[in-house]
Every structure is written in C-alpha cells, then in structure tokens.
Image (cartoon, rainbow, N blue to C red; front, side, top):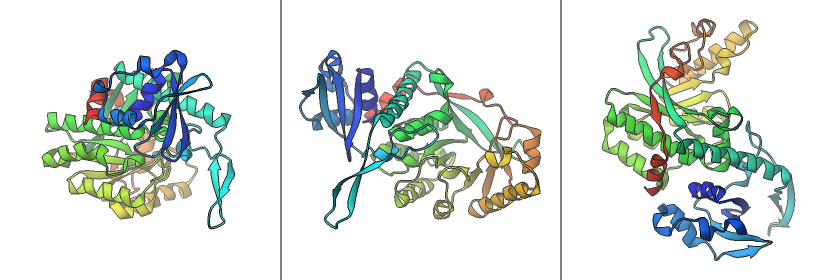
Length: 373
C-alpha cells in the first residue's frame, strides 16, 4: 500500500488524508490513472486489493478523484512537520459526543500541506535512489573497549546518496516514519541482512528497525519463517530498535521483541537516552544490548558532574542489559571518556570508518520481490 502511494506521486497525483483509515488519491486530468496505472495482473497483491476496494472514479474541480481504503490507518498526528520531530496542529471542535465531551479534529492547512509535500518529495527521491543503485547498507563493527579484535557484531548502516540538499539517513528516517513508509524500508533492510547471513556463515550482523515496525502482522510473516527455518542465521542476527518515533502499541511491541528472541535473535535498544526511549520498555523486553546515545559521550563536557552523568547512565544500562555499547566514538578523547564508565563495548569511526565496511546493495528488484510476498 505504501508503494502505491509512491507510484501515485510518479503518476502526477497526490494523496490527501480525509479521515481515520481513509485518504483520497487525486490525479489531474492530464495524468489520468487510466493512462498511467499498470495492468492489474502485474501489480503486487496488496496494491490489487487497494484498487479492488476503491470506489469508481469521479471528477471534482477538474481532477480525477479515486477514493481508497488503507490496509492500516494513516495517523494524522504523524503526517507533516519539521524533519526533527512531529508537528502538532491546531484543533477545532467538530461535534459533541454522546457523553457531552467535544470531539476535536485536526485542521490541515497550508503549513501541513507544505510540510507533507516536502516530506513526500524526499520519499520519492529516496525511491528513485533505490532504483538507481544509490542506496546500500555499510557494515561497521562493535568491539570490546579493551580488546578491539573481539567482535560483538557488525551493524548494517543505511547509506544513501543523491537526495535533495544532501539529506542522509538521519534526516530521511523521521520523514519515512511520519509518512508511514518506514515499515516497508525496515522489512527490506532486514531481508537483505538475513540474505547476507544466509550467504556468509561467518557473518554476525545487526540492523535497525523503527519503533513503528514493532507490529507482529503479515508484513513480517516471511521474515519470521526464514528465521524459524535456520536457527544459525537467527543466532547471528541482532535487531536494533530505535525509538525516534513513539511506540504506538506497547503490548504489541513487547510481543514483537519477544517473538524475535524466541526465534534466537538478539535484541538491541539503539540511541538509548534520546528520542522516546524508555526504561519501562527496556525492562519489559530485557534486551541483550543497549547502545547509549552518542551525544552522552561526544557532548561538550564541562566538569566532573557531567562525567558522573555518563557513568550513572552506563550503570543504568548495565542493569537493563548484559552488553552496553558507546556509539559515535570518533577520537582518542571519546575513548578516554568511556574508560572507567562501566561501558565494555564501543562503535565508531575510530574503530573502522563506515566507508571501509562491506556493502549490501538495496535495489528495486528487492522491493518488488518483497511486495509480492
């Protein structure tokens, strides 16, 4: 369904949210979907379902309008906004409920539209980058602080070139989270990493998924089947959960993490101490690894008080997980801050520049294969 939204953009159309679990796909007459939409037989299963559920085409103010029904809800609160976070829109009272309380509906004005268009333009540019082979995963090792030859695992980091304004993964991921596309990306990344593990029995890899992906539904069935079929691959895979977006369903997220652990995977909490990371979630899933947000190591320390904060955070992480990793170690000064903090594992450019890591290419064929599953 998310791939359908991208294709609508390529056809010269636009997508507008009109209510819970519903949105409109609009085309200009010059870009009528009848002339640009591929035949039904060539479409992925979910996309065919969308079209089958759609009402007949109607015209309104010179545009073709195609009502669509979403497979999963598009949440208005996660659409638009600046790249660094979520945008809260002014609300108006639409009606009063039976209990007498007001029902508030967000207003979608010019600010929301402009922000949505910026986000969607970046998402479309990312899809084109995949199609042209400009997106890959680059591995970077996580090693012991006192013995750099001892490997915990290598993280597969997303790398993309050619996006507008030089945008990279750090800017792209929050945009994909807001638009609802990040689950598709996470599934593609995990599938590629599993493929590398299947091909190389010596590889020990990890990869990131968003908190938005912590839903044990049909999107992940084929992934779980692959892990269930090969326990050795599962044992060499670490799934890193990044909570840049809030967890929508706490219980579902816990069940998702526990399912991965039952299959033999390790679970890591990434960027702990930043974003929406919570001690409650860490206590509930008991991760194997916690990676401390690099800002706590690379910040502008001004004295012993700040260093004591790092040590206390490391102690908290150590109480929640057997392995604690300091991310973003780039120089000797960063290393000195970590010594004596209780952190045993490190990751960063000082150990191995990411450009020296092995590459796993993401391509259009991978996406089309996954959307058919």
